[in-house]
Image (cartoon, rainbow, N blue to C red; front, top):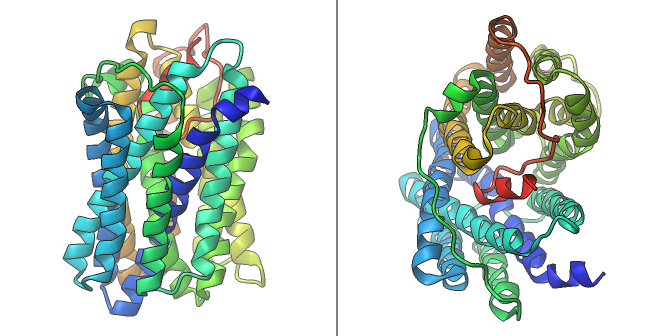
Length: 402
C-alpha cells in the first residue's frame, strides 16, 4: 500500500491528462460536424493531434534535460490548457488544427515526464505491481474520457473549459509531490529505419496499428454520427472499443508468450479483417450491434501495437531498446498522422462503412506481409515477456527490461 501511495501523485496526474486529452478528439469531431466542417477538415484535426504528439515525443526529453521534469511538465500542461481554451475563441478549422498540435505536444510531453518519474522509482521487486496499476489507471481514465462525450455539448464554451480545467488539475499532483524528481536521461537518437531493419514485421505491425487506432479514435465519432448515434451513444460506442482492447490484453499476451508471435499477428489481423468486413457489410445492423461490433473490433485490433513491439524487441540487443522503441514510435506516428484524414475523406465520399473497409484493407496487407516474413526468417529463439505497451513515450519501454 505504501508503494502505491508513493506513486499516487503520478497516477492522479495521468488521470487528469487522459480526461482532458482523451475527450478532445471526439469532442472536436462532433463540434466540427455542428460547425459545418468538411469530413476532410475533421480528419485533419486528428492528424494534427498526432503530428503534435510526435513533436512532443522528441522535444520532451530535451526540455526535461534543459529545465527539469517539474518545469517541463508545467510547460506541457500549459500547452494543453491553451489548446483547449483556444477552441472557444474561433470556429476556423485551420486554427483548430494548430490548437490540436498544441494538445498533441501536451499529452506526449506530460506522459514522458510521468514515465521518466516511474522509471526512476521502480525496482525489480515492485516493477510488476507499479506497471499493473499504471496500465489500469491509464485504461480506466481513457474509458472515462470517452464516456464524458455524453454530457459535453459540442462547440460549447463550457465543454472546452471543462477540458482546460482537467489540464490545469494535472499540474497539482506533480508540482506538490514531495518525491524527488528523476535524474535527467539522454534523449534517444532518431533512427527511423532502425526498427524496419531489425524487425520488418514488427515495424509493419506498428504502422498498421497507427493506421487502425488513429482512424478509429479520430474518425470514429464521424462514423457514429453518420450512423445516427446521439452524442452519449457515441461515447459508449468509443468506450466499447477501448474496453474490448483492455479485455484482449491477457489472452493475447498469454498466446504471444506461448507460440510464434508472427502467428498471433496473423490471427489478430484475420480477426480484425473479419470484424471490419462484417461492419462494412452491415452485418451488425441490429439493436446493440454497433456496440458489440466495437467491442469485437477493439478486442481484435488494440493489442496489435503491443504484440508487434514485443516481436521487434525479441531481436533487439539490450543497449538499443530505447532507440528501437523510438523508431517504432516514429513508424506508428507516420501511420497515425495520415490515417484520420484519409479515413474521414473516405467517409465523406463513400459513406460511414468506408472507414472499416479502409481498416480491413490495411490488415489484408499486414497478413500478406506476415506470411512472407514467416518464410523469410525463423522465429527468435528467446522472447521478451509480452507486456501491454501504451503508445505514450519512449521512456516507458525501459521499464519492460529488468
